[in-house]
Image (cartoon, rainbow, N blue to C red; front, side, top):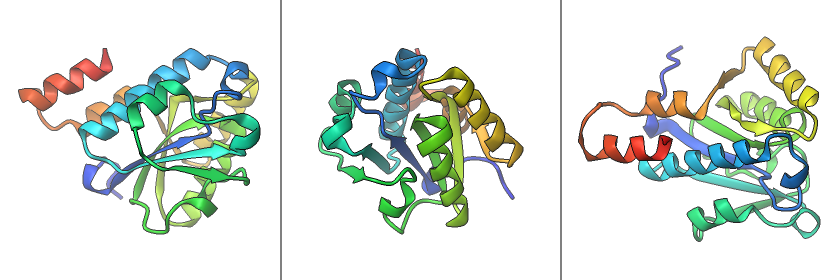
Length: 176
């Protein structure tokens, strides 16, 4: 299997980055900052973007930092922990994942994506849980199951082809 990221076969999934949930998330500011970078990279490389909201009537909408960037991108409301039952069947082969909580919705989505023969990349710097230990255990379990764990910056560098030109300048501005 080729582990290189082909932007023609890659999409981005933001899981439950909601206003009422984020205040209790460990390292909330880092997670939101990295999710914002990921959205900007998705736009730069024209990647499909999927955004889920868990019970938005209770947990609120996606945080304003993300909403300001995504415009009219549809948000997918869900009532299951895995996002997969609510995602379109024609998903790209590779899915870059940011969101909360690592050990619940992110983890269950990852395993369901694998069942659907997709390759999820969990962006470890763009996911978290309410409790640091739950986050660490979720990452550790997925890593032991050979789920690809990476970072927003690492996948960004994987997607850029050349260290020159306007695209590269825009890319560098995103990662600052």
